[in-house]
Image (cartoon, rainbow, N blue to C red; front, top):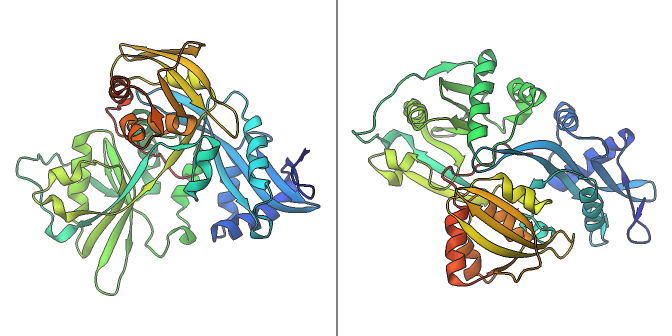
Length: 399
């Protein structure tokens, strides 16, 4: 057991702790999760991957990770420790429980080269070396006025289907999509079971799932009935080709009696460029998605492909968990070699910034302007060119 404050201890979570863990999660996040869903997430956890903070016999905090598979730029897949369900009871805040749980949890990650999480509170996780690596842009489309530009082809091929009856096709398309998309995550069988069960308590007041299916893509959405007009909320759009993307949006914009369509997507999504009036696609919110912490910096940097050659020495700080160091990064023809070095550094930054750069969503020049990355201007330009990704990063699913 790991000592924390005199009255708190950290230990492995056991089966008997899960009712208390459920209470902590419901209190921390303001929502009760169905037991069936909790069992799905538990099935994705390696042994000893959950820790709890205890005040005597009372469980007052929890943190855990799941065994996930992350696609990186270029299509390589890395094992990722997916951190989730991090919460401390409001009666035990500011007593070191979170830092102690995180220290122990990361010690247990073993051979995982990278860890990821979604941050319920953004201010917390940067100090633990996590940086936001994907962005969700919430868009609202005025369906009734939207028209495709005349030069945009109409590829057709979309069918309206019941999703559970076409599971094999949905799984196949999603797997193709996630292996092509930085931030994509493998979906295990039990998670597909849970998604397609489509429990009423998961619908947030919307309808059961509707599904549009194309040979190279699909859309799953719900309809929410309002006092005046309905809206459709897209919960997943996976398109392997631009043609599939356009065909699926043509079908969505053909939904009668729906005034608006809402979707969370990546910045720079294609839809506004397809319409005669791009202003009908309004951005109603922006927030971070996946946060990354590199646990094995050379392995992670060597896994992805790059947009330009690069030769730099990185000095990476990591104040709380101590995972930084100095590394020589050489990129030639898209592939990288990275190893520890004692050579003078060209770039000084922290591990959270490196996590934000990794999937290509954020630019080194932006962090340099914010004084969070220090390097000569030529080096900053080289970093921008190297870390770009031709395929925009998207978080495969929330965890």
